[in-house]
Length: 194
Image 1 (cartoon, rainbow, N blue to C red):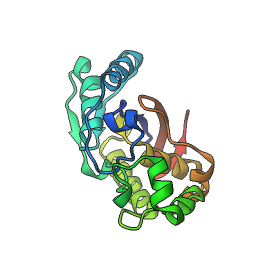
Image 2: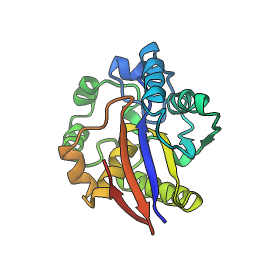
Image 3: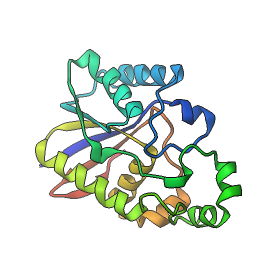
Image 4: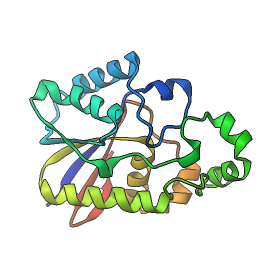
C-alpha cells in the first residue's frame, strides 16, 4: 500500500538567518521561522494528515508542534530524521568555510563530502531512506508529514527521482525554510509526486 509523505523543511532558525551551517547544532527558530510554521499549518489545513514525525532537533520539532497543534496530533520524535552532521563546518558561514577549508569546499561544490569529521552523505542518505521505509511500513495507505532538514530532504528527493545524490546535489539547491515536497513510498519504492 502506498504511503504519501509531506516533507517539510523546518522554519528559519537563528543560524539560517545568520547564514551558518548547522548540522547537528540546535539553534531555535526565529520569529520568522515561527511564522513560517504557522503559515504551513494554515496552508496544509485542508490536507489529510494521519501522522506527524519530526527530527529531534528543536528547529524541526518546534515547526512540527506548530503544525500539529490545530489538528490535535502528537508529534512522533524520530532521531533518525536528523540533519547530516557537518562536523567542523558547524557554526561557520560559507565564506568562512571557503577560507578555512578550501579543499573541502571544492569537494562540496562538486557534490562530494567537504567536511572531514562529520557524516558522509552516503551514510546520511542510507539512514534517512531506512527511516522513511520504516515509517511507511507503520502507516500503509496513510499520509505522513515529516518535518526535516534541507540536507535530508535533498537525499530523499534524489532517491525518489532515482538520481545519484552527488549528481543531484550539484544541480539542486536545498529546499527553502517552510516549504513542502511530496513523495510516495509503495513496496519500498520511492517516487516523487509534486
